[in-house]
Image 1 (cartoon, rainbow, N blue to C red):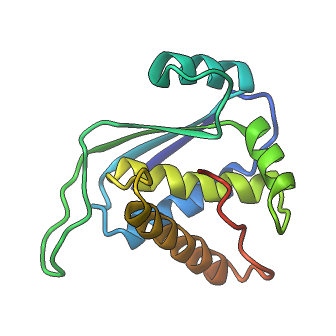
Image 2 (image 1 turned 45 degrees about the horizontal axis):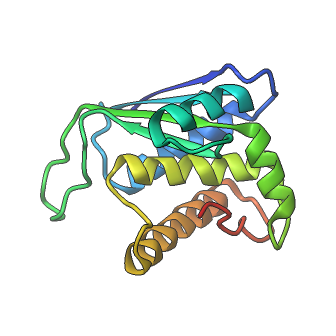
Image 3 (image 1 turned 180 degrees about the vertical axis):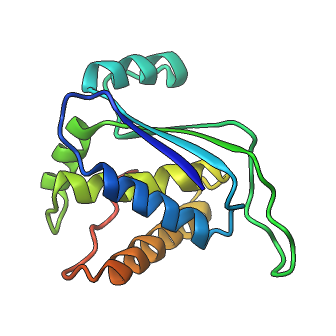
Amino acid sequence: MSIDVNNESGTEVDEQAILDIARYALARMRIHPLSELSVIVVDGEAMEQLHIQWMDLPGPTDVMSFPMDELRPPVKDDEEPPQGLLGDIVLCPEVAKRQGEEAPTGHSMDEELQLLTVHGVLHLLGYDHEEPDEKAEMFGLQAAIVDGWRAEKGLTGPSPAPTVS
């Protein structure tokens, strides 16, 4: 798996954790090991510009996903996963910090960025949360991936509750 993490935000973030959880999520979703992903960490101003340009919505957001080859997880167990460019995930630590602090259980900016990385990966794989059934599926999968990664890393305490809407 080729995953690049590029921090352009000016904020110190745990880039290794972002890389690790992205790799874990892609492996768990059975994405071809030669596929490529880019994660870019930007400041609030850059994220706001992207949010306006691509979503026509004001203000910065927490995460945006830009799919390339529209890869999807294999449907059958014996099916070979396709290989290609997954796309880009853009994260904003300013928003992540605020969301982590405001979450019911409260968690760190880095924990929120890990959750948002998984959220972004799922969006790149075609998952969405516009409808209640889609939201239940996506957020359930997101929680399972974050919990699995945290257990594998030996991290204790409750996993961050989803703060993305």
